[in-house]
Length: 113
Image 1 (spheres, rainbow, N blue to C red):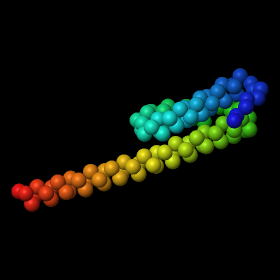
Image 2: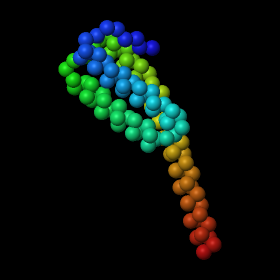
Image 3: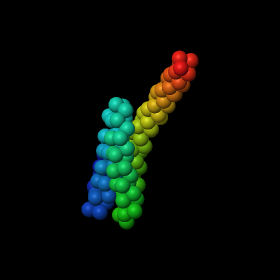
């Protein structure tokens, strides 16, 4: 887990923004586990906004602090990405079943019809 060290005010603001992105990333896990993809997407858009702003600012904290927080973001991100991939596979499977059911219904109606 990340541990803070002494920083200047600008560096403190900078690392705080990065920590907020980490919190958003961690908050994405529960809705991803529950298949609440709209919530995941909303949190991701907020996180992207924070990260874009963070990367465009002039003051950066020490590389060690940045590395520690980014490492945690990437670790949680891998889990979220895995859950998203599983959700996509499940959605694709359901859509294939629905398509087969529709095709069977059409075939039945043509025979009946």
